[in-house]
Length: 476
Ligand code: 6PG
Image (cartoon, rainbow, N blue to C red; front, side):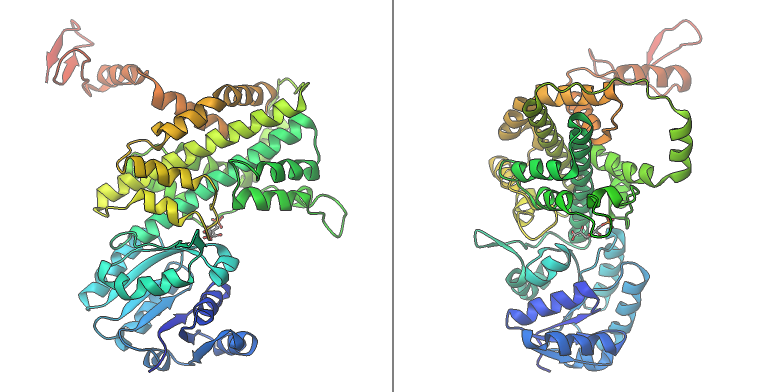
């Protein structure tokens, strides 16, 4: 046994992770259900370093130094359970099994429990950065036991992305914590992408600009506060021309967004925990709306717009307004996502360090962005910040763009451009800053029709009013 780490599941992500380990000087055991993929890795990328290929799972496990560290990179759900089942009889006490796929965190909690009973460490780890990240440095979010991180952590930190020399990998917390934060990362990714798409739509409709022109605007934005991977690739995508038709590439792509489920899970969990992650929810529903072909066909045929049309006289001012609205909405989406992490951390006893989270998302991952430094700084100022938006940097930044944000959302509404994420983020902002909300009326209505009781602003206690009788109030 001489391999220091093993990877089973050699589709593109697993293969690239294995290559990344090898390039960092580790001897890497590699295995795949069909041996052809293992062979092709050795043939095509054998030069990356020291690989130990195995055809059978038994040989693969036997080729690993103890405590064994096995990284599973297969499809989430059934396929992951199947690999774990196959591995279990071959492993020994103290061995570490890492699930690096996009597992749903309740599955991770279940698997961690089951493996712990057998004396094994199960580490559900978020890995972000796509194919490129897996090969050249992803952002890594490992959960599981703190003990497992002692031997596994240094290896993962080694292959992770680095920002200012700091690894984009840190121990997140027990059992499902790693996969949970990866799930929220993806939820934020959905919100970020939707916000960018809305900005694009506004620029397109407001300026009548071509995709390439808008691409240039994004390129410019990428030199300021908005600098991020997603803005950068958006600039690139928008300037790409379809080879076959000569049209802007984005114009030939069918406008129905798909998803594999992490955004949906994030929203479901937001509902479970009662955390208003409205930006992520709107982004997820916007994908669903785009894919609802029968509804869209019926809507397009029947629904009048009765909307105005843009009359942009100052092009630069309009672009700057959209930029500000995008930045403010983005801050809201992240603030909501970080609130969700705080709520889950409290619920499941994970003790997730949100500042460290933001730090490891600065590089490697899909939502990597300059502005994550600001989030880390905010949690350095106050580790228990109840609302990221209320940190001084963000109150200033969002405050400065507030008028622009309001102009953009109202222009969009007046002119019939759907901006669910921009609009709901602004509504959230106004809701969370309101001193008094109409929730008082909801409580009164609930008491009226269902005797659901209410509390008063002027004294302690729970009350009910006899609505159908003399309307007297009693304490309950
Ligand atoms: C990442 C990505 C990655 C993947 C998503 C896409 O962090 O590297 O988030 O996990 O691209 O699964 O999700 P959808 O297919 O749901 O858009």
